[in-house]
Image (cartoon, rainbow over all chains, first blue to last red):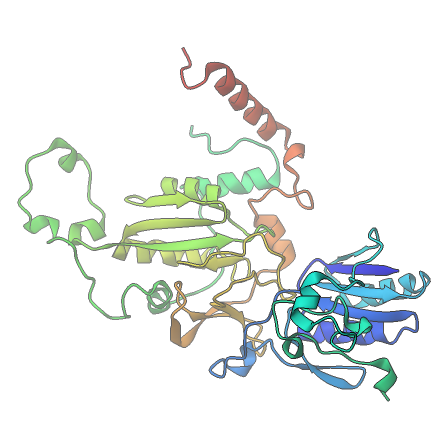
Amino acid sequence: MDIEIFPYRFLSADTTEKMLNGIESLDDVKRAVIHGPRLPPDDPDLLPQYKERRNITVCGKPIELKVRTGRILVELSSEAALDEIEKICDENLKFGYDINTSRSEYIRRHKTVSDAIKYGTGENNLPDELIGLTDNNKQFADSVDFIDYDKVE
Amino acid sequence: MAQYYPGTSKVSQNRRHFSDPNEKLEKLREISDEDVVKILGHRAPGEEYKSVHPPLDEMDEPDDIVRELVTPIDGAKAGDRVRYIQFADSMYFAPAQPYVRARAYLNRYRGVDTGTLSGRQVIEARERDLEKFSKELLETEYFDPARTGIRGKSVHGHSLRLDEDGIMFDMLRRQLMNKETGHVEMVKNQIGIPLDEPVDLGEPLDEDKLKEITTIYRVDGDAYKDDKDAVEVLHKIHITRSKGGYNPE
């Protein structure tokens, strides 16, 4: 099943990092995606005390955070993990949040025509585990930071 | 007695508080005259005011009873240009909001023109008067560094979710949180031109204070439907207008 965590505020890099690490530590989580408006491009003139863009570490792997987290979409293998996820949210999202479960899927699982045009129709062009994680307006390499569990030590 | 706003709720009280020129507004922060000029961006600090006509004393104006009755404001006397300041107020418990600003501006200030839009409110006045009004608008309860944006253009953001630190979205990123001091600083002027030195706007107000001074009805704060008096007056206006149209006879 898929769920959507909808915080009442946009998350900072610190909270995003804590949330993702918390969610990723659960066994029942199959995939998690963060979703939100893009952070402004890195401005070399901006003083460090104002900067929001920074690298976060998820599952020990550094990732450049490119969006301000507005939603977290999570694919679960069992409903039992919902309580755990609520606990993580209570801990990190003091300003409130919703967990939406009404839709059967929040992360798309089928290839679309846009996917075919952008990435081609061959199986290797867009592996199944990456369907629904891409932003069709961006180049693939720019828009997806993908951590493959099997390769994480 | 002037009737500024109906209602018995805290929000309606705050609306009356803003709109009544006899009520003194609480001063919450100190912003220097020079910083106000920098934020406005109409002239460089220390620069002379540009004028669009000679001072009124030197002008040979025709005799007119209205000219004798109305004392001109300082800027008009000197022949200043008309300039503006514009604010965007977040829906999330910002202290002021456009319609309240319009009522308050027109009750409190002379010689101004103001325009209301869904998420922003512009006020226009002669330059030196505008600077005086702007200082008051920035230093008092009208303004919260996080929930109120000083935005001459690109105002989008009043209805968007806030950032985690309570700052309202701004595509030009004029007001930024300084992570070291916890203060909000203005790094660009109101139309987005970078400032040489940031202007410190102070700490954002806390949530309880905002809920106490807000003029916005919200279901998660004071709901409009619970303010029976305000709703009754609204119904009365609606009915009389519907039945009488624009011709009450």
